[in-house]
Image (cartoon, rainbow, N blue to C red; front, top):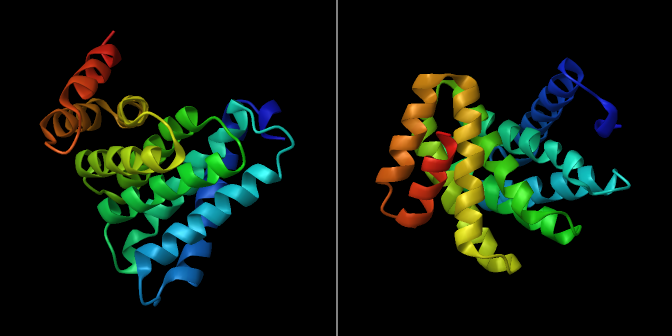
Length: 199
């Protein structure tokens, strides 16, 4: 089980989840009339299926959320859309799925946003724009599942920043700048998240 895996085994499992998600999305979504709506449904079902397979929807099992969203963003080019569009839709759908199975939505938000940024980094996408889109998706989803939009924005920003920092200092700087300059995001919440990430 995911809980007991450590180090490279967790990374290997998350990579496998991301790759499986990409393959599933390309076969299911490619050519659909409404790619993003189909993607939302597919990502949500993938999250629900993955988390229902785990007997305890604890925070540890939410690592799989990162892998699913990462795989969705990596698949964007194959689906004929952009990582920015996919990030928003995938984060929104992942949060809906976690909420449906009774998981920790705030933790899932952080993992989902981190997965979006990791996926963008893998494909050479604009990590800053994808981070903003992921936070927007989290805020949108939060309103639908009864979670504070400010809390959602904070957790998504923190998850995006952590993932960007794991890629490298340039990615971390790009994500911070993009989040701080996004007019669509709550400035005070984002400033606090960015400031907290520099401790």
